[in-house]
Length: 155
Image (cartoon, rainbow, N blue to C red; front, side, top):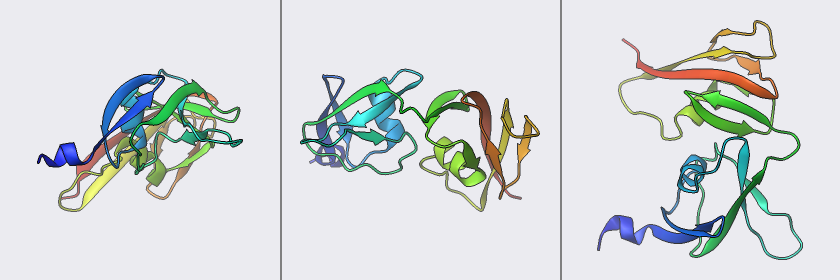
């Protein structure tokens, strides 16, 4: 039997049926469900609990057969950013170098001693644009901080 078929489950996003590998990642669920810019994905729960926010930067999500998700408005405290032209919604305004790399590369590239560069523009922190140091952080605006995260190999 095909390994992909064994690790695939049927799920529902916004009342549409999809098949996804299991486990999957947040970004893969957002792409699978065609979640629009500025919206987020919620995992439906039973009982009197609130549906759970699925973070786009969540590296591993274990799915259940016929599980339901829905897209909706982002929580009140959210920040819309762009990384390598892809939209992301995060729930905090200070992002570190490592967090940005994980968002850009949920499955990190392999190779001899991989390295990354992070540049930004339209940030709330000063300077408002530039390169982010490996151990640095940047404060983002509510909407519109842009990042470019590139993978390189050290020589």
